[in-house]
Image 1 (cartoon, rainbow, N blue to C red):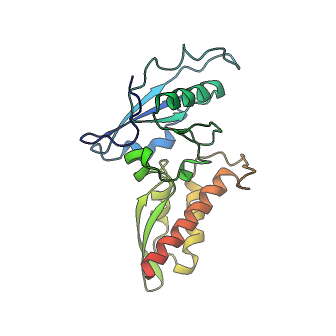
Image 2 (image 1 turned 30 degrees about the vertical axis):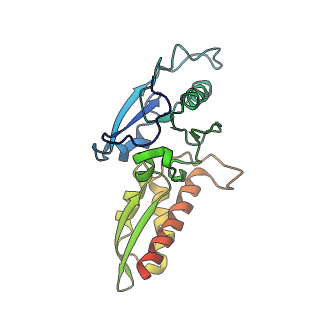
Image 3 (image 1 turned 120 degrees about the vertical axis):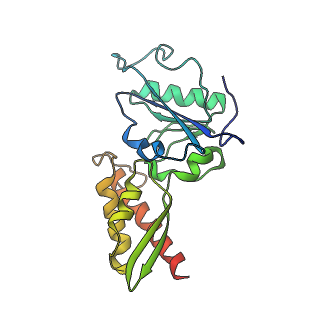
Length: 220
């Protein structure tokens, strides 16, 4: 079992392991599947959904060993998700578990996939995916192009970048946030008391802020 690796390993792609139930992570790794294979090797593992609401042990469901530089935890059952994060933390393998409340030095629980901050432990995945970063180009008061530097893994950032072309500069940050919300796959019914927003509204807000920052760089 690999221990204490974390981040990109020099000389080979970063090995990213996804654990999901009933396709729970498929839409959240849409862009990751299209990533340069020289940077990321993606492996997806499906876990059978247990019948029990409360599990005494996760040993029959979780893998016996984890050979990865990073784990994406999209398990739905709360006991399985918590035990996977705890296992990765013990092994010092970074694990990303969006919307979860797990704790650990190697555990990252952003409110949404696009709320993941940059961190050296996250390697190539963290450089490519998480809280958005864009470079904006304008011409004659309208958006002429958007270069996506860091994106939501669900693909919402890239889709919004395509929809924002030819939009007036003054309206663009708000429209970019709205376009992201249309492509966001987070649960709109959820509500986070810490951020005071649903996950979908959080995604729109963080993309709008990133777009404004990208416009400031274009103007400088």
